[in-house]
Image 1 (cartoon, one colour):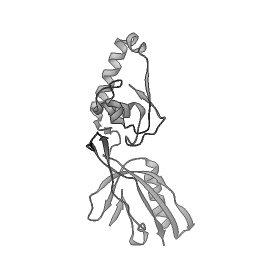
Image 2: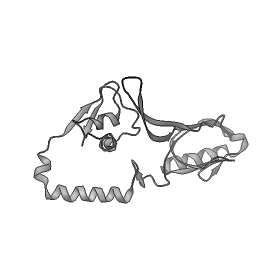
Image 3: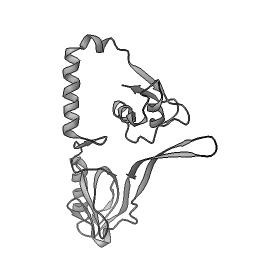
Image 4: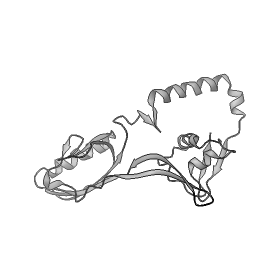
Length: 203
């Protein structure tokens, strides 16, 4: 069985393949003598692309059903028989109409951690995020003069840099675990993807 949200794929409509899995975000530091330090930040599921054809009577209805879920912009559950269910966001739906009984499709899914996209922001519960925002707001109003006089800091990524390594620099935070501040301030989707010359805001 293959189910996306409330839509169940017929056997004739199954995608040609179903790529699952992903990769781990690991920071590697190398030391003299061949020793290495590895810090594992967890496993990240890769985007999932489904490609196939809606066939026979009902092809238009099936395409419209997927289109409606995509346009709703809400997480849905992907269920594959015998595998763990996972929450995904439909980020792309591209149907190719051939006739009323044959519609090729390409569906791109981005795995998410929760049914509610607002529930988790960089690993922080929504309540904690809201509380932090309220704290920042109140402190800003009470000390607007001091905060407005503080200059904004930036960092330009160099070859070989990692967010953990940048945060660990004494001129930044002196603690690699604070890399999440940089992730949040720069709205970085994948902390493992930064590139030389990239300008980062250092909050």
